Length: 510
Image (cartoon, rainbow, N blue to C red; front, side):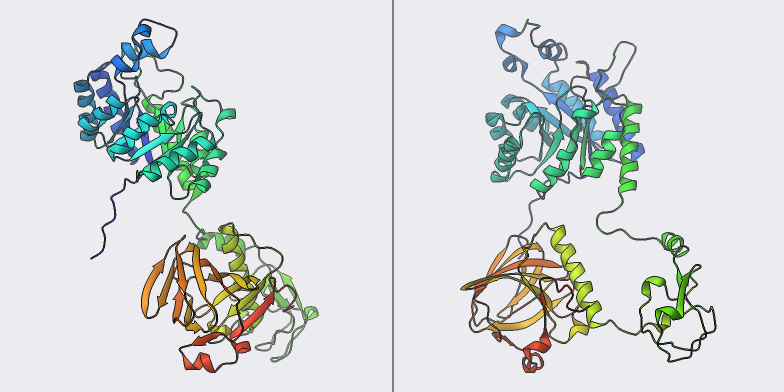
């Protein structure tokens, strides 16, 4: 029976409307804000939450300072006080409006109120992100958590991430600059990229404090990889004026519109799909191959026999496809376009090898796996190079002494046949992608970070649908120490199953 996965909240593309104290201590005004935000969420089609702030003011503010104006927040908090029952009305309205309820508790009693009111997400403000007594209580609640990073060093963020990971908390984090409002020169949006790379698998967001009319920051934040967006919101009236960083409904709608423009401009993740229109436009400027003189069928073409010019005609050989020594597939008259059919069928050995090298280099670079200048590359093609992209793997030998280290790369859809080693004892560690492995007849799937010991004498074969990079750490690797279960492979001399390259094989096939 499979083990069910723990349910996790989907943080991606969540918009948080932070009400803070903009309800002005009035439930009626708070309900109007919720209604306005729900209307915007429905109109724009975004997933949204309304966030409240909870404080147990009787304990949060020291008794001796309740009448003080030294701290600007104290009078504001006291003047906008709501009871738990009143906050309950707002939470109910948020849920009934189809929005997600979220609250920032600033003290331990407020965490208990989050539980009592059934608030769905806990937000930890920047000022509380290293408040360990509070975080212990937050983590114990078992709700999804978002924490902001305003004023935190990377060392601080490392500690908070580790804290929640060790407690099994499902969390996301938000880049934040705790200046109200935040001018462009302090936004430091490159921090979003740093956080994405430093904490893989953690959703990164952007908590904005910039001028509500600034629509550039949200676009850049999305492009950098932010997937949660938070903004202070309010509803101005003839008596209520919003502060410099809170957005009115029309500004919120424009902000989401700017995000939608960024989403459209950035496109999907991964390699882009090139449209037919783009290909037509590009081809309209490509040069085709034409003959200078009459050419007979079977004649070998030299550079002096052809010229390159526009337009490129349908089915015509392009200048980029031209190679010396192509053999004419038919007779050609002066100035006639050379057909693409003149190209030989199938790929040459050089084409297969170098196209593979380019893909492997890209995979290693994408995963930030550097190599030294001293390594050997082996293409294993157990049924020949023509089937390499189906059966085989790429082995990069980094060290081979009393111990050995190899980096093994498989392209999507490749399979390495079942075999064993008499002398070599090896262990695999997955660096990226998924590896399906058959070991002594049993199937397993290995994920990034997984390790597997393969003792000498154990049958094993492996493949991947996604593409995979893994390390092989072993005893000394010897030639002729791979024994294949398929007699066809076993009967082939090793040199027919392998192509060896020095470094990346530069100049070996030129």
